[in-house]
Length: 358
Image 1 (cartoon, rainbow, N blue to C red):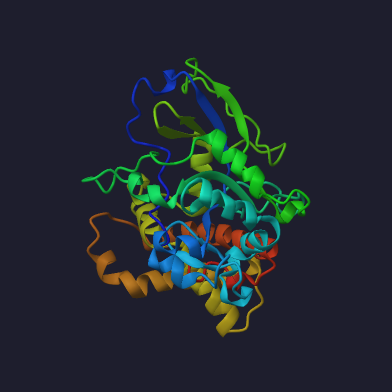
Image 2 (cartoon, rainbow, N blue to C red):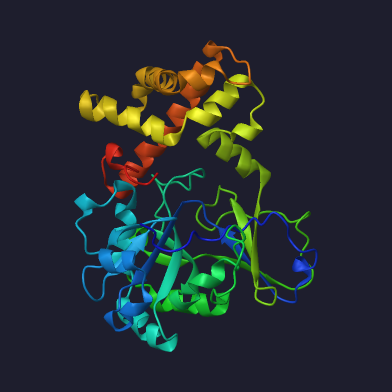
């Protein structure tokens, strides 16, 4: 079930040469987490919602939430029925988002709004999740339901635009209306930090990425540059983050330098690693921890061979099977660390994370 069209990518492959010369550019910190969105189900505007939103809503006033592509439920659902990776975000919706102002805003915009946010879980950058008090959701965009179709130009389903989204001044003002100021920091909903207002003098080739607003010792993932006059937004990601992201989640097959790297990039997915970790813990009764990697990475390799041996036998790249093992071991230990951190963050069991989010 789709919740709304996929949120547009910021890193457009072709940026018009005059984009950075726009009179007004807004530079926003790109927070590293997981895609999240929510909308208030308002019976007065029932005809404007997709069927999937109506099905997920548990009555008028429900905050229906989803990840990048799919509806996941209502904030009134029992946490036991929600994927563990979303528990903290859902607690934030319950405790830190005001629904009354959002309902009033539906009248202002003649229909409901979609709030886009970053679910602040451990992805690639460690903001000090075990030591720092960090917000749960970081808002960065708002799209009226009536404008959903403007995200994809007619005739080109792959070219997403920023048309139809609210300008940043309006969106950030709404974020402030929705947030509960007295909410605990670790359950809070906050707007993405605005770094700078620029006009006609921005040079992406010489820009120095600042320290993150979330941690003094962490450099930002990147920045999002918004232009109201160009009706566009562009993401700049620093190269060091991209390299760190590859180490955390593995390379793309196209970036692999060797046959073994290609095999790992293609078949050693997060879903496969988590599946084998759950088997060890849930079915075999093993205690979760980084020590699981002694058996986990070998299980993952065996699973790859068992499912894809025919493809591997006819692969147009040569590789030495023994070279695959240490690469898979690195991927597995990174995944285990991420599972451990996010389980603590969401007050959930590691095996309850990302069960349905692939």
